[in-house]
Image 1 (tube, rainbow, N blue to C red):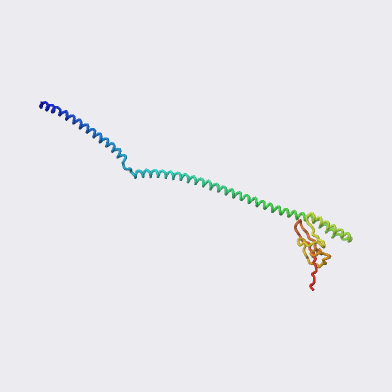
Image 2: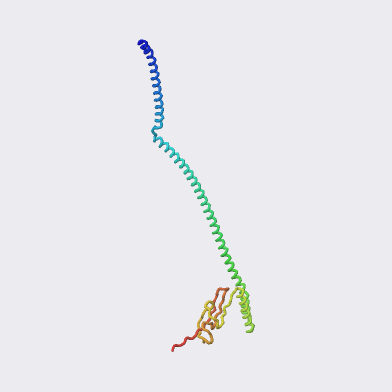
Length: 244
């Protein structure tokens, strides 16, 4: 019986060894698989935990910054050239306006000069027309005076009539030339604008008021509203009372 048991034992030992080998192989495979998984995880972790290259990141950032700066510089250069072109156009417009203004200024200056010349010529012509009108008015008077001087066989009354005729012609001339005679009368109020005082005369206040015309030495003349010659007169005054 013991031998049978031993034989059975010996017969079962190889099987047990085979099972043990299989078990060990399985365990080894599991360990290998386990380490493969760890390795894979470690590789992933190493990749995740891989230190960041700051220089490379900064270089990339610098490249981006440089790229932006270059773009901005390009934009500013384009804007600068645009401003220069606008400035040149403005300068050209300003020069054109200056030339136009200068031309307009010269044109208006020439027109003003021409107007002044024409006005001066018109004034001269008007003045000569006035002289011509005066000469034409006085020519008949000259004829009358010359005829009266050559008339030697007339009577005193005829000479008087001739003188009156000349005076009438003179009045007609004054009317044509818009000349007014200033002929004050005694007792008229003295007006220094149209009268010149040749002297004073003491008068009775009951007879004549003070500061009035007493005598007329020369008549005055006025051309339209301009005094050509004031009338020369004497002016009345009241005698001062003597002190006791």
